[in-house]
Length: 202
Image 1 (tube, helix red, strand yellow):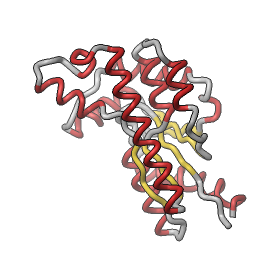
Image 2: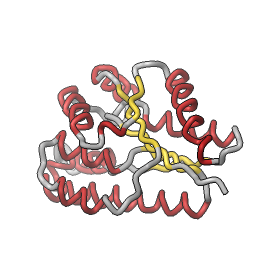
Image 3: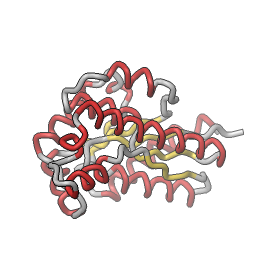
């Protein structure tokens, strides 16, 4: 019996995580290795839009830093739990759009306390077989976010977020992908790496 892989896409906003995760799941499925695209967001864009409607600058301004971190972490914990359960029940390769490392990086980028508690909580989740860090220039990422037309990101925060990921103790375990390249090139590189990892498990 073939063991199913868990693959996580992480990186700063605008790095192409969602596009790549969707494309990888589709390509693996087409190649006869059923895969499922699974999200693990924090709900930040939705919470920020709610805050703006209520006359606040963003969700942190609305809830306060501590309460917002608790809300964000709870949402991400719930969606990761659902994604992993769904993957286990279907037996499909799990292609995760974001994972626990995103929450760790968020805390560091904002220079908030609470990382130790969040690590203890999220430590309940299994380590993925592959974690792809999509390395993208913050300037390019900011332009990509603007083109989406649904939210925006400050360059300073994107730079802090990039450094936060690179400072994580798990950083040496990440597979770094040049995400400044076009989506087809990025997908081709990731597919080859996934295929190499999958063969010994068959």
